[in-house]
Length: 113
Length: 113
Image (cartoon, rainbow over all chains, first blue to last red; front, side):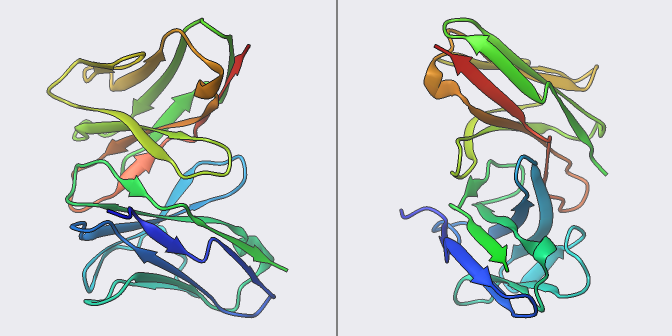
């Protein structure tokens, strides 16, 4: 089992460009969570998805951010028109069910220049 | 919603000493409490978890205790080693609806050789 796969590991975008972050959950895991981490800070929840459904997006800004988890393929976190403040590490985690430990991916470190 | 407070934010101990990290939570409905370890530049990894039907759980040098009445839980690391140096996060699962794990802000543990 390859674990939770995130790509790219590092992403550099100029202000105004779009960033697409991909996450493939562990085999057998149908719950996907995206968290954002700023340097020296904790993990801030963004969005929780199950296949083809957004369960909770309360932590995700309404503008410029969107997420999906299609029936086939990885989960995608999309940030449009990136700004410097979007620079952070974005971690994806998956679990087989609720009330169960998460397995995190290695994260995507987004730098906006 | 759930709120998790974690203390201290930084902790330095001498190698061989014990380290204790404490967390409190707000939602009495929470019943799952995992702990994650994050080494510098790496992903958070689950190290131990406890559920509300258990008061204490041990795994070699680490243990977690839970006091549901007081709504707090703690991580104990005995005989600390330099490789224990990392940031530790506690979390709580609020089972109201389909809510994700809520994390504390982390404790940076430094074990001094």
